[in-house]
Length: 330
Ligand SMILES: [Ca+2]
Image 1 (cartoon, protein in one colour):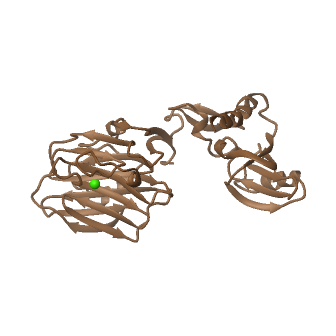
Image 2 (cartoon, protein in one colour):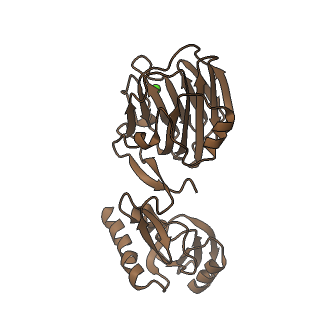
Image 3 (cartoon, protein in one colour):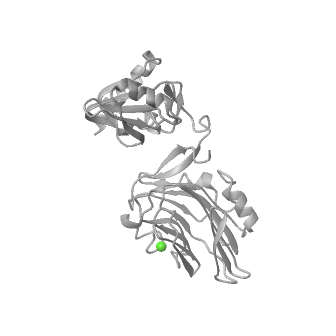
């Protein structure tokens, strides 16, 4: 597989320097997927013209015998992993309209890829005006981030983060804060039919909510121990309000990202491991009112928490977790 990718990537990585102005074509290849329109046309030239006339079209795959013309939003630098051998097809880049994005796979970590003319360049995350997000690329008990003892105890908190759940991952332990006596002291669990929320022994399941959709969402959970109010917001909308523990403190413990604990920092399972991306995970030692939650949900990345800071938490990763550049804020 590595060999195939190499063979595929090599031609345009060298050609991009020599032949920047000529349309780039690859006989015997096509882009799999990413089709915005598919039509029947007599010649490849007609197919190219149709693409040039169609907004969002950056490249085509044309079948010589069936005359099928597939138009793609993006090209070989957007989806290098999708350019695959396919008998009878010719892949052609349409250079008059460069793609909006290029794949980070073309740049070595931690650089980001940005299109430049008909080619691309590898730049730092800041130069790309992108942010670092924590990427959970597989459902594995080996992949998590753990931050120990972020605080001694608090009488209130606001937890805020951005999450993108992979559409194939139906059950996901996204966030847990565990203590030695309660490994589920604070947790948010996301499935394709509900979201489960725990705060010190009080739990609610929000049915009919599907966040397993490949889209970025802002989640926010607040609690204070005077009245015991717990509020849970999705994309700045208050989705649930219930009464939890009063007069208690949330004690010393550990944040676990991406895993369901069965016991303090143990018992992780592949089946409920999170798959997707997380960013801007922060906690504050007071319960934000709705207005401040709205500010968090419209700010990307958010400001840093006073008790948990994303800039620290994101470095505590294990397994195959990667920090990658993402344009989720744009
Ligand atoms: Ca748990």
